[in-house]
Length: 496
Image 1 (cartoon, rainbow, N blue to C red):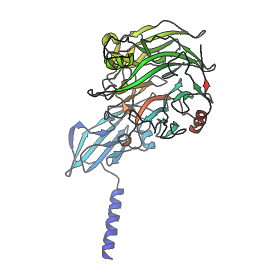
Image 2 (cartoon, rainbow, N blue to C red):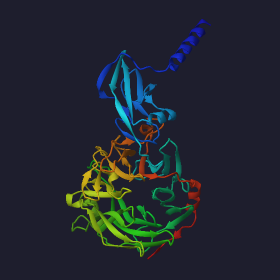
Image 3 (tube, helix red, strand yellow):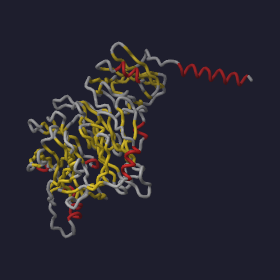
Image 4 (cartoon, rainbow, N blue to C red):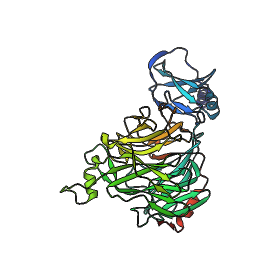
């Protein structure tokens, strides 16, 4: 009985100690280095409507105390994980800046690490993003989904999953979700293998389209919605993978043929732009006024080599020599015609390769990915983001956004004040979304990783994010409705 009473009071004492509010130590030494935290939110700028930033302290220590000060208020947190509640975060964001102090106890002594700021921009961000969640593999896609996430909180939901109409044995790839002017009611994505085709939803009407015609090498692949018309530009691609045995890059994804086409949503009509077997056109994107179609392109002719029996094998042997530059074509809506190509940025002349042109909503800035070769930069650790001033034609690396690893797919917010992009900077294996503010004058702030309710979430998620896109709201069509449409007979497009 005596032992039971002692145990009871010990547990009761432990309960009261654990419920005590953490206190900022009064005696401590100063450190001249910042605290190691994950995600790294040191001196970042966040939008006024972003969800709370949570982080975990990666320091050796026995006890931890964090104080966040904003205006005349302060909030104290104990333990390694710092997770402000929604109501606390709303109060913090009313100030232009919040200061974060981290105190660590070791061997009975406290140390305050170098404080840092989190800046709050009055520029809001689009409330939703969507992305594909995929395992970092080269041959499997049995568990692949397109999901959407509210940036104002942590809510995430399914748009469509590849297991809705298939099983592990057959598999089904889904990819290339895209929206017209950030509108979640006007979207498209592809399904491959069984029940293959392109799902197009427009103001409540959903169709599955078979775009493969005798005049194109493939169905539509990489999409770009016209900003105002029911038209979608696509690349058509013959794509393959090759694997390296003595290169630090794991895999090379190449197009051995690619071209551009225009799809008329109302009339289910495909209009190829041209067919040049030596010109590799890819990744179209419209100017905000719809007057120009931007894209990347590389020129490659088969070489006279004894080793290469086909052009495809020849391109595999000489993959580092394939360099893409940026071009555009004028567009006339009345007859849906395109003008001749115009060079926008000749990256190949600098022995570099530029892909994924994305123009800011005000039409002044062109953000693109640049690497040493090729078009599929998500596998290239040398890939960086670059910014072009379309008024002066000046091109410069977006140094504030880049790291020592991959920076690839990127999108502008609808107000042009934020960008989101994919990066492998955390561990070199998994792509994660990063967000940064743009001042409209050519400068970005330090990017921050997509916040999560649990700060270690991205350390534990063994999946990559692919194609982060901003949205003005959530997709309201249920995944089951998409699945039902996928099972129906497709509408066959005709070629002009």
